[in-house]
Image (cartoon, rainbow, N blue to C red; front, side):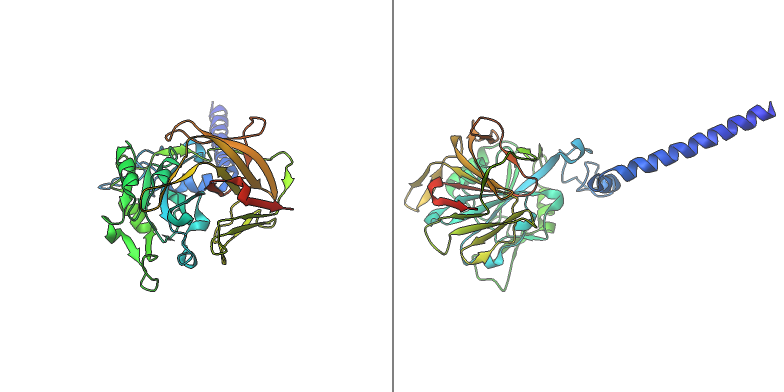
Length: 345
């Protein structure tokens, strides 16, 4: 009996050691992002839905393990693109997606989308909201940060359930004014202020599947290592040059080289109309239209569709199959005519 007892004890010990090695091996085999998530899920209130004692959680709608990182909590910041503001751009390189639209005077403005867990130290200069900036990123975004807005935009955002907009006019103490930058290009949103304001967002940040389009290897396309967009003036024209080392596009806007190096440049054609005495624009973001996708030094023709403002965009190639994007940042420019886009190998 003693021999049997010793044998069983030894067997239990060996099994325990084996299980320990298996557990360690399994954790080491996890991708780095998942290991980091596992280590911080309980301790960091921004990384989980488990609040510390006495604190509310910022991401109250995010599950503990949202499909292993396939869902993200996304916020939007309106960023100015006037030529006087470009030298002061901050945070663009950390964006998931940048959506560029015309505003008054046919100067463009950026709707910059961030994962709240990777929000940069500072973003800006922050400017005002327009209705097409809202509908152009629904349903990906549930929280907007801006400084003012057109009457139509403020009315539109007030109509949407589950959407929160933080207007710097009313939350001015949360927006930093840079003393060395002339107004109105001096308003910035910091990571700390973003987190504080999110405590007031009704329901927190809604998690969404990301990316909202197919990624992977693409079929061969036309060579396009250099691409230009005519925005009516040398001050505003844009050039993209593909950098194979960075696997992205170096963007020059006027004379300013962007901090962002997008892996995808998507151009959408739609209707743009002048409305009202202030020169504000009406830009169609639903329905259908032509599209051009530039990725990996190649160009692909396609189409976009959006059934309603609250439905997501669908991007397809000329045969009706999903357009295949490269992994990484996407820059979307919405404009009135693809004829002003030129490219060469």
